[in-house]
Amino acid sequence: MIRLIFWIAVVFAAIWLWRKFNAPARQPRGDDKPASLTMVRCAQCGVHLPQDRALRRDSHWYCSQPHLEQGPTNGAR
Image (cartoon, rainbow, N blue to C red; front, side, top):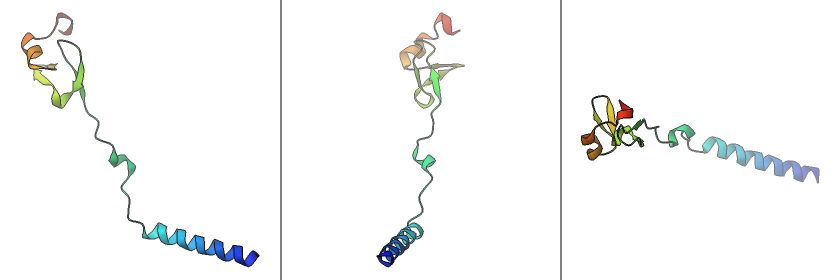
């Protein structure tokens, strides 16, 4: 009985080792995440949005063309 358990353990260990060394290389888990986006605040309404979707005039960011045309609110200056 002990011999049977021993051989079963050897077979399972061999299968485990074979799978471990023949498995394709995996990419690091950190690469799956998208790059973090820089968020900016609209100078008119205060909404936060990604910098790549915002409009810029001088040192202020805006969420849309109408807000860009209106300019910053008094509190933003």
